[in-house]
Amino acid sequence: MQIEEGAIVSGKVTGVTDFGAFVEIEGGKTGMIHISEVASNYIKDIKEYISVGQEVKTKVISVSPDGKISLSIRKLNEQPKEQRPQKPRGERRPAPKVWNGQKASAPPAGEKQSFEDMMARFKQVSDEKMTDLKRASDSKRGGGGYSRRGSNK
Image 1 (cartoon, rainbow, N blue to C red):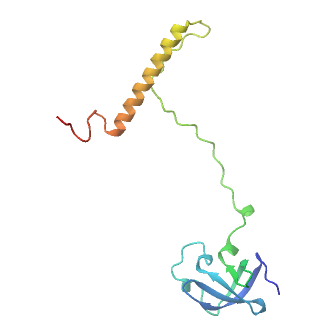
Image 2 (cartoon, rainbow, N blue to C red):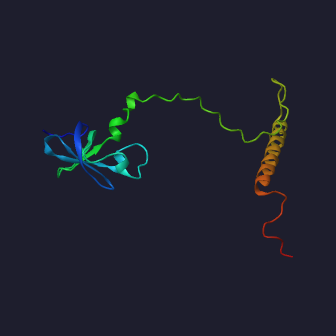
């Protein structure tokens, strides 16, 4: 019988080592279950999960050109991606607002402003933002304007 990748086979455990277990499968062939393929959680001692003479059902994960067969119990027990329950996707959070200072009063709608008035308003808003940003960054650094190194007098 030809063993193919993805096939589900049953067999008897013939040997257990620190790194995995050897399983005799159909047709007298031997495959190996690596310790990482026994369960989805961390396994310190494989002998707690598998013992010699135990019948196991496994999934063939690879067959090398030289005939080595890699088996997995973990992948047999995992649900295929199509059958996994989908987590509901939440709404995207809005981007955090950086500047939360006071807004300068906006001119009434429909009122024409001169270029100088618009520039003065822009400068005022910009100065407010810079002041708030500097205050926030100083408080994160320890503030106070004191140097960590001390003064060189």
